[in-house]
Length: 317
Image 1: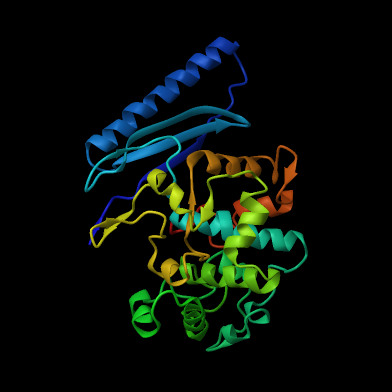
Image 2: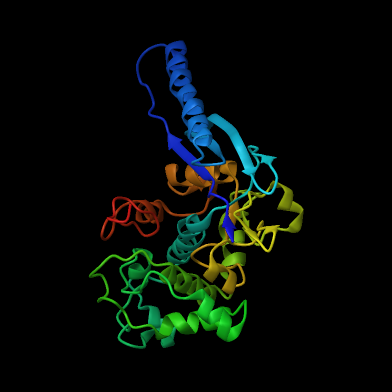
């Protein structure tokens, strides 16, 4: 099995220059932004990445948006475009799963201090009865990083979402809640299940309705339609075929491509919209997705350098 290198999407925020004339500021911006082209092209030439889409914004203005290189390099080449759709992998965790959890917190449907076993009684097995939702969000629940997808697939076939949940619930914790940090895909799979239990909708439908559609993120979804295939950056070659529109993560595939840890596909532009709600206290052009308090919890360190969604300064980063 040959892997195509993961394509990097970079986002940055430029500092606002508060002095000097407008033309000077614009010239300085151009000088800074022009250096990006050379840096990305060098990475491509050295074979570190096949391509990239770079988008930089300030407030509601896009200052820079360019595509470089290729979205597919083998068995043939396809050019990257600004509209290329990416498997955004673990960005699924904060953008879909943690944000959905915060929507439920804002609606007072759940509390971050609630025990996971309140919603999934089986989770209390083997000493996990004290684990809270907050511990899952910050990767301090004691759950291991991952579990064998091949083993589960061999036993139950694919997909087998219920069996994945059963397996995670049966695991013995590696540490007490809140004691140690261990970046865990398993915790975010459980968080997505909590969203489903509380809302009655799987993470796919809930995130689409309450986050992506609300923000008019038109090219962000789980399980993208086949009509998008031509614009999707391939992640792998499987049996001679490009993997496009199917989540690359093995557990994500067992979860029917609707997982809390991975599975969302998106574009640089759509992700820039999401970035704007974080910069604007949860609101985008009058549409409120999150409270200012929820945005702070998503982005400010809460435990072991992790926010309730993003990494701020953990040992993992």
